[in-house]
Image (cartoon, rainbow, N blue to C red):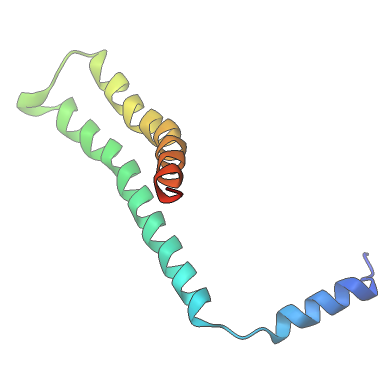
Length: 92
């Protein structure tokens, strides 16, 4: 069992007394919206697999995995790349 030091108690008490401000709500809203966009991007993979695995748009068997992988690779590499780009544009 971990006993708290006086510094930890002071920090905990200060955090407990903090009020919820408009800034907190604004940050929460921004995080929720960005999470929604991230989920939409990832669900795009499911839509693409449904569209391109059957019907008139059905392609070669090896194309669909690469198409779906490109969605996830775009999410992995695109987010940091566009984040640094946006930071560079904003600092001008």
